[in-house]
Image 1 (tube, one colour):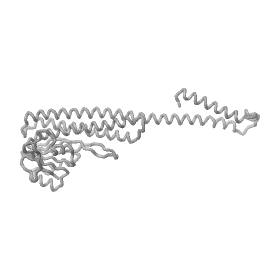
Image 2 (cartoon, helix red, strand yellow):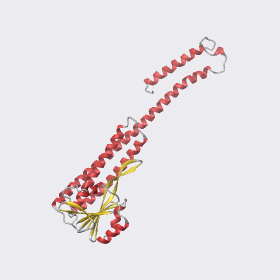
Image 3 (tube, one colour):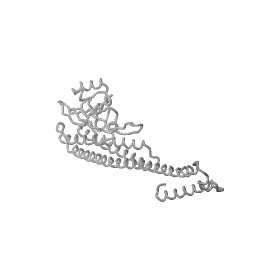
Image 4 (tube, one colour):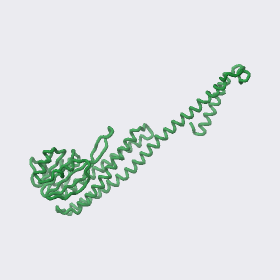
Length: 313
């Protein structure tokens, strides 16, 4: 589907048909809708549908009569029955009198504009609109990064409790998400640098100030991504070490129990050999069986004391 909006006197209103100075927001458009907009504004259909390809990377393409801008924006997704995050392309096409956005799915970044929550937002100030859009994108990255770190903290707090293999899997997914974020943020930063030199549409001093703010926000998001990747890597190593240490403790206890169980087995085996009674100690002594059992207990107690002293138990 697609919706048409335009601001007049600071008020955003929805239109039934595209007009000069409008914003066309396309969300998961059909082939018919893509063809309709492509014919109406003389845009290559391939360029219009580029944003629907998840493998497309951020870039700026200068075409005859319009400019195509592709940036990556964060979006949630479900992996291994857990809410994670990834990035999807957002296409922006600049015409002389219209701005068109194309995205595969609905995103809070664009919804924020539709609800008219952005100060000094105007569909007629195209470069400012793009910078505001990128600013919201950078803010969204930072929000998602904080949520990722919050999940990491929750896993870290379970290290001394009920740690499971799923915690390792979730940490891996969080680390994969940060890889996607880092790649997308670097690509978006390159787009920002090219927008700084963009001359097709006049840029006002206020727009350049906003561009500086966007650049700072993206740089901060890149630094946060790098820090959180290092922290998650440390948490994953800690979790792996704790699981390995628990396994070692279990094996150590099992080995100690095996040694203790071997003591009565060896002694009873020796006294159970088929030899003459006169050669077997305590064979003819009253309460000989009890004496042997007490001896086994004493030996086992001594071995337990020795193992605890050597921290084997």
